Length: 374
Image (cartoon, rainbow, N blue to C red; front, side, top):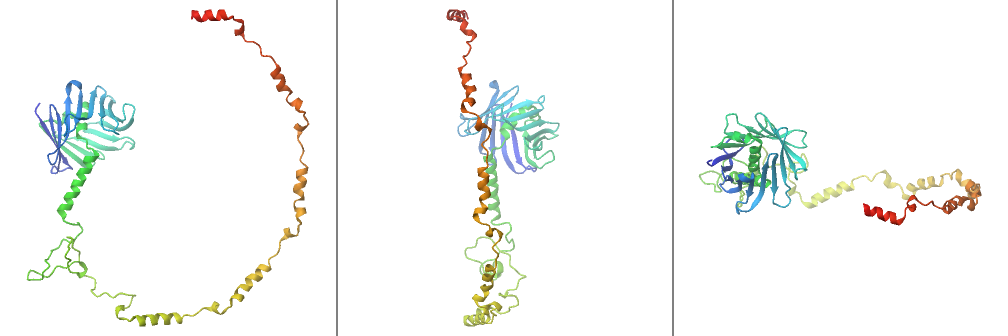
């Protein structure tokens, strides 16, 4: 078997290279878009297992995948990552992935259908998370997000190998192992794309994209100005502002209707106008009423309040009924029973002699002989 190449592209267009898989008899080597070795998988056909090794230390095993007639067991050697099991169900037409071993919680299911394999995340009411579609003409596997008609996430093109070999459940598990992406690889790809966008744009995508002039106002054209007619700064950040051509240049400030700037009005004149306006304010009708007259009516209302009917009842008469009720309580029927009669029955039960059990009739020698026989 010669070495085969699987090329992975991002999205539907086969232009943006993401990863390259070199598939050979000894294993799989995964390279990124910069031709750096990122993952290494080794096959052990005699032991029916595949190991993921550290590219920097090829003898160091990071994960082990053990295959048997019931599925695959993934063993991880990093702290905090529990093992995962993949088991065939429904006559081999479905694979169930459990997190934490054979008795762990169901994480995902993979259903083999006519056009490909549907991946469903457990707990999403049966909604499909990802679909592996085998291209009808052969030569590629398309991974769609959200269902059979969802957007294309990745496209894997095969060279010198037929993609149909991964339609079998055991081969698909192997394909699933070396093509999955870790969260670190996903974050690294996002950071790389962000860096490319920032380096290529030179600024915000909402910035002014018109002609940029020089600082000098020679024969090449007028001096460059930034937004609102301000001249360009020496520490230009590379962002141009769109000038407000429709707004008047000398916009008056102050209250509506004012057409003169307040900067030319002396402070003494402003203060005089303010104090005159305040002195001309009316003090109101309540200013001429003395305080004693204002609160006189409230004090008279307080004195005119009635005392109420309960004030005429003496305290002795109020609490007489409660004291009489305390004296009329009866003692109860149990108070007439003497103490000797109450506890007579319990004392008689104590005085009764307990009858000896049946085991007392068996002699000690007979008991001991029975235990020896056992």
